[in-house]
Length: 247
Length: 249
Image (cartoon, rainbow over all chains, first blue to last red; front, side, top):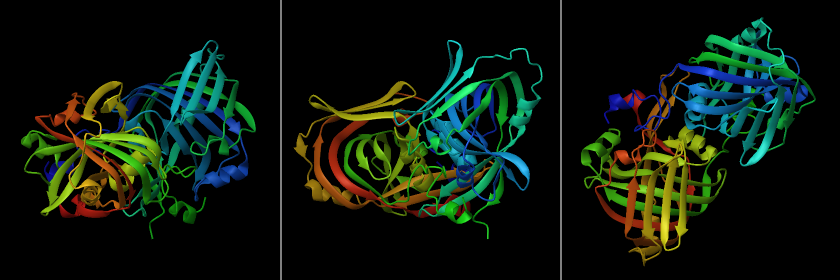
């Protein structure tokens, strides 16, 4: 392969790039988000400076992604810490687990999504919206929420606002000698968001301590409630808001 | 978390880095390598310039069982290696790799540019046959077989250990946050502290199934040269940049 073709590749490997170029459109992207109060000192420890904590409520969310352009069908679970950057409200994505190579590699390499391989599942079992997460064969999280209890609510402005909030990730990519080549805070905003349905309701969450999937490092003190949403959206490229290597 | 702590992180996520700082030590790493001849034109397409593929059009199809890998754990890998030259020096270019463990996938891609994807390779002894299989997205895409310890390889463990010091090369591509290339390099590394515990050769066969996202069959098998089986301890250190496409091309 000629050098000019190498420079046009979106990703490794040369013979079948793991992910194509973005942006990436998601259809029927389903969320269950469980908000809970945790230990403020643990939040402070998990948040990279100069991000500042915004309250003591964090979230664990499950995502079912049946139709992700360039990525396919997969599931994810994530931990989200509300914070501010220069006074702007944002959500720091501190941990994320997926069961599919292209979003895992592309998520880390493009935006710095903190993704590892884990088996998340979001589904309806009887009367219960249920999220599970297994990492290295062990169960590490169980979330449950009531199913569409406020089915006739028309006002989705809170959901629209929450999906519009800037996401922030800490992108770390080493150089070939192991020193950091990239150390940045990256900001991402979804575009073209459509809400097909949105519900709130009672929820419960259990997080089990596991060293390589440490969701339980932000312990559940009190569950605030759950959000269930079905959406379409576009994941565009991001922007660098802070560069730790800049002199 | 302070900027100093952040700059000391070996990898993402900050909450539990996928991989620690290297180098990485592997114990009882077991290889099955089936060498075959393929189409020279297709081989040329699979190799990034300025690397030059070997004149014999040989390809190495590998399975590697790694039961004890520092920082990474217990996993299995399968993929394609193409003997090449770089400025006349013989090197091994890794073209495709499939494995079942996230830290070596992320670390492999992010540190050295190993072209790794998540899949389910397996290397096992099934009655009289050393057997490698690879499943990608639910489908079998490769099966290799060789006889079990039929004959010690010529030169024995010393010759094998020497052969394993050959420079390996990867094409490392990491995008920037806007999708453009941030890193596009040929990187090189050399294994160190190699102990070979046994090395055997035997006849072998290889079956590759066409698959778009695991295109092992894009380098079709024209003729099997032979199979090699060996077990070793080794260290995978950090590497060096051989060629920088963003500066030199």
